[in-house]
Image (cartoon, rainbow, N blue to C red):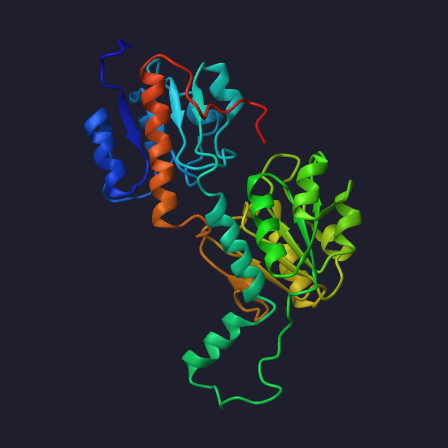
Length: 329
């Protein structure tokens, strides 16, 4: 495609208005004004017609979809950090570049982790429900007792950008930071975070009071938190997941919570979004929020800016700054 040509860009969901407007100025863009998620037929139509496709986490750009891609499609500029919904191997086989939007959601997601860490032990959602139902009878010395988090041990699974941002915040709340990662952090980083590394997940799970999942979803991390892992945790443990729902076996989690095998959970993501395991909906010791860890005006704008930058750099004939390699995790 000539460098002066305006590439055909198809966007699968509504984006912030300023992002859509800038795309319209720069590219031949096709927007999704009604924000209806693409089904497979619309995904196939998009990859057949576009030079650049801009999907989100709700779009399963798998091998079957990419098999239908036209010769024009050369870039998938994902609106989001996680790319487990895109078949990177199939994209590479078709010589399609894939980009994402790393770095801009770190603080927002880490803030959500801390919000859930505070909400579940302190029973904030339960208390709010009592107020709205009109069943609060007033303050009492034994009413709505929860647990303080100061002095507790936080176990972080995945110590990348978000995991380290969580660790920084956790230290401010008096939590002792533990972590499990495929590779140990440099000693200087570990010292700065006052973090204790565990070479195996099993060893860490038996020793901490709160578990925060901050790793990507990959074949290796699918159902990483299963019945076996949940049974390693002590009964007073709280589980927090703001990463990907598929990392947790939701049925096993619901069973563990029901039998009080663990004390509670705070979930921002779910295994079969937007469906949620029905048992979780009826449990008082779970805080459920609708995948909003990155949902800030600032974060969404920054994501859009990165998508535009990746498309523009690619259009100009250069390697996009956020190109994802097949082995990305």
